[in-house]
Length: 255
Image 1 (spheres, one colour):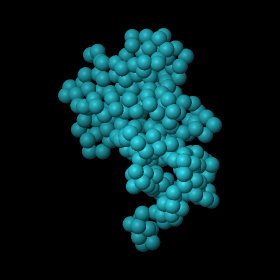
Image 2: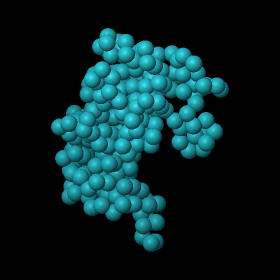
Image 3: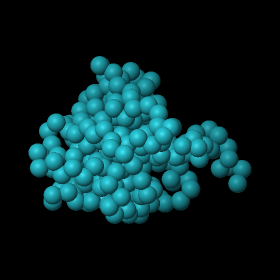
């Protein structure tokens, strides 16, 4: 069945025509699986443009019932608008197209974005043993800029930050993010940055890779630069991140 398409208004006309005529569902079926991905994102080239195409799917218990069908479009449309905004600032991949394809009792959602190559998630770099303090400084700076723009990432973990080119950072999976017309309040910022720190600490705990010396300080130093000022809570955060969550410390000491 035909779907409803949304195209980036800045899209090159020839690329837009190719996308419109083929449809994202058909392009997804023809694309190559993304190495290391979960199977929902694939690679393809359209008219010489490297792209990543994705068919959204749920995880967890909900994914057992309706793994790739959705009933509400609003979250996807908000993510699309935020992606357009942040890509113009270099903080997100550029959205090219979106398509909703009827699939009773709801629809399937496909999205197409410009590919950034070579690129690796922050988690993949860590698991490959390529984590360095300078990368965390760049990551912290990107998070600070995001918060200064009034954006609270809804799932800020090491898998949702993509590092590419000359250590540039973009954010993935923006659907559950919230936005404000002014910079984020202190508690929201601290909670968001701490969540990222705990994600990295979890990788450390389960895989045992050594952290580069001063890693947590590199993260908060970058954040201070991205936010625009160094606040007192940033001086305490490295110690909190190094210690990890209290329950995790209790479990670790009981081993």
